[in-house]
Image 1 (cartoon, rainbow, N blue to C red):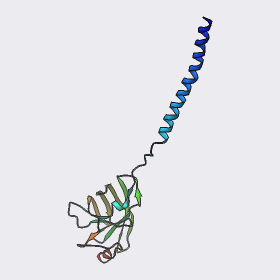
Image 2 (cartoon, one colour; image 1 turned 60 degrees about the vertical axis):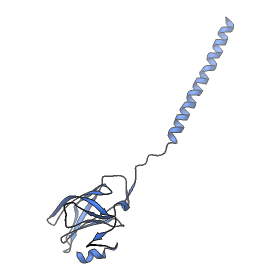
Image 3 (cartoon, helix red, strand yellow; image 1 turned 90 degrees about the vertical axis):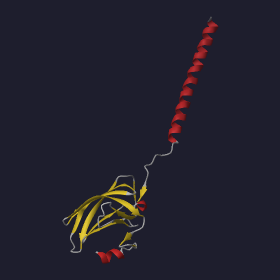
Length: 162
């Protein structure tokens, strides 16, 4: 009986380190697998996907134009409503602030906002010099189309019109 009890104690004594070692090994494998997972970065968007001409279904007389440098402009009567799209942004919806200016030199830094809901849908809202506009715009061309022709990136076709 003494032999059985010693043997039992030695088995018990040897089993505990094995179990602890096994638990440590499993924890190490779990921690290693977690640390090796790819980082889940939010999808980054570029202003390049927004560049182009945007119009409304309401046949509003002005379109929104977004140039390659991120400049956004809407000409409305003698007003220009402008903004700047960042190089990159994290997600939709993405909102930028607008400012307004006119030929008389009147400027307003907070004339409204543009909220992009996707690369083809935006909501435009401004209130400047008595002109109010709120509407959804859709992207109809990746090119800058104004005055029935493609315009250049230096805005020269806008200068004469405004």
